[in-house]
Length: 107
Image 1 (cartoon, rainbow, N blue to C red):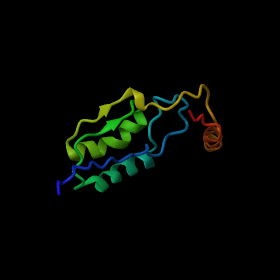
Image 2: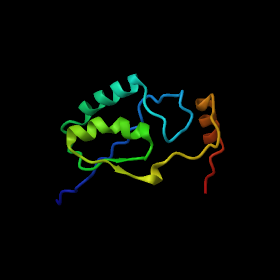
Image 3: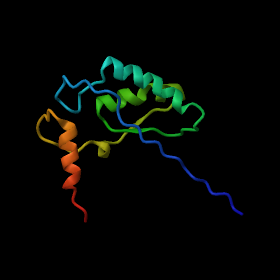
Image 4: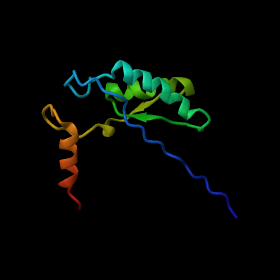
């Protein structure tokens, strides 16, 4: 029987965002978020990670940088991994996101 070369893909959501910054792309992580990003790298030890892709947002780059540094991998920023444009600051984003999925178009 021929052995299959299966790949495992890990998706990581950004750590805790500083919500005092309303400008989306430039929003950084909180101190707690930076600490959690630092702890995240331990999870990926021994997982044979070969590539890391990230959106261009500061918070996503900050989240994966400790892991990338540990694994000596230069993350590739992919502009298409951006979030959808909302247009204005949303105070209750959880409620807003929930409603978005309720009206999600299926083609």
